[in-house]
Every structure is written in C-alpha cells, then in structure tokens.
Image 1 (tube, rainbow, N blue to C red):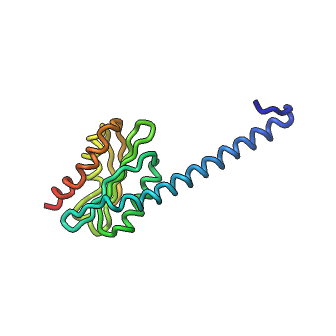
Image 2 (tube, helix red, strand yellow):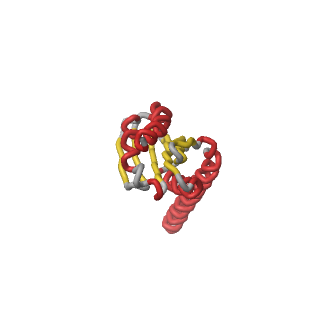
Length: 157
C-alpha cells in the first residue's frame, strides 16, 4: 500500500497524515465559503414579523460550525432579527438559531429551538442569543422551518 521500503515507511505514513490534515483544512475552508455564499442567496427569504426580521431557511450539507458562522453573519447583516438555519447531512438534521441582542428580551433562541427541534424528532437548547439542536427526521425540516414565523409572532403578541 505504501510502496516503500521498511526504512521509508514512517516517512510515508507521516506524509499521508499531513496530507489528510491539509485536506481537512481545505474542506473546512470550502464549507465556510459555501456558507458565506449561501448567506447572500437567502436574504430574499426574510419575512418581517412585528418589526423583527425573521429568516428560517435550509443550508444543506453545512456542519454545526458552518451553521453557527452563518447565523452570526445574518445577525450582523440583518441587525434586528431572529434566524433559524437548518441543515441535513448524512440523514441527520442540524439546527442553529440566533436572535440579535436587541431582541433577546422578547424572543430567546434557546426557547425557539426546542419546538423546531421537536418537529424533526430532536431536541436542543442554548443561550438567549444562540442555540443549537439536532434531529433525526429530515423529511419534516421544511415544515419545521415554516413554523418559525408563527412562533415568533406568538411570542411577540
């Protein structure tokens, strides 16, 4: 497999391990670039509920870190917002929710993520400004995301 002499085997293994690390870094950078690009694509999905911008959308293939970063980017961009991003990766659902600081007295991300996660067969929690969840039923993700605006409206009434 290594096509080397026993004396060269250790060096070959080290080179292969380094190559694996380099590829992991490239993959992480590509996922980050994808999230950044997708951030721009989803801004047309923003709804306004009682003066607060609400964005609930999919970013399939995104890992937890990528979702977190994308939520932060949307919070910076939208300024006055509630954001829920969902992703399906290897059949598992990942969710991330963010609430801009100026709205955490009205809507808490930790409270928001729970009913959304329940709809996809999961659970989650977090802080008032950021929360994460996981689930197992990817077929229900779209419906769960559609429920976010109504949940926010209910909290604000």
